[in-house]
Length: 265
Ligand SMILES: [Zn+2]
Ligand SMILES: [Zn+2]
Image (cartoon, rainbow, N blue to C red; front, side, top):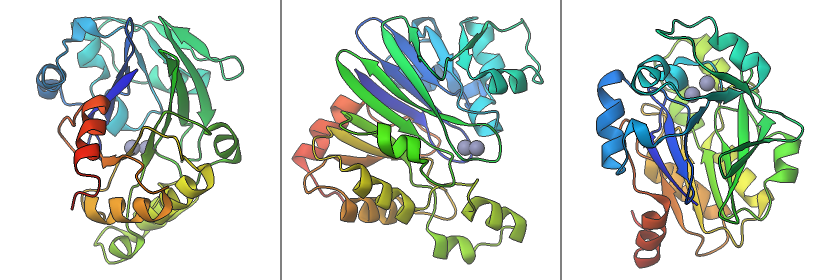
């Protein structure tokens, strides 16, 4: 299994995950003009994608859904509540909505997807995705790491986790007070330190790659997020951050790169 972030920030989020037979997107917050070029940079076209899983209704995660479905009307998966919220969006053709079972999980082609509720100001899910005998944990847009995830996200092969902000940068920002309180609160986003503590509790000694995602463009810097995560991770764990507004490298390439240069500045 491998994965590639096509964009990761408060502007647009989209991650592609594939095993040998199935290719899915997690969210599609991309602008219309970016969908084809960003997929092409990852060596894909819309026709290669089999399904889209939606984490939640926020615009940075669903902005490009209708544009993508015009290219290919593929099935969308999420919880009943999130799907209900998607029905409030305008779609050119009615989307194929599929419930992602929170008890048993769901097979999407050859990938298995097990959702977990996160803590955000609208219903939001993270997942463990199984494919090719490996497991990827995915968790963004949450004010804290729920107990259920702390229990389940063990012995993963890969982890994609939010490291949204540096609280000191946030407190100095010129955003309105209510936005700052929301984003720093229990239904907001994980700070660098919260992400680091989660990495420490999860203990990913054998993890092949940790990717930090959804970094705030104004209130974080990749260097700060990476330094904080590295302090909490087992020595030598491959670590990278997903770039904002452009595709990053595929996970297998990131692993090769971090082996050559384990502590890039
Ligand atoms: Zn978001
Ligand atoms: Zn959100």
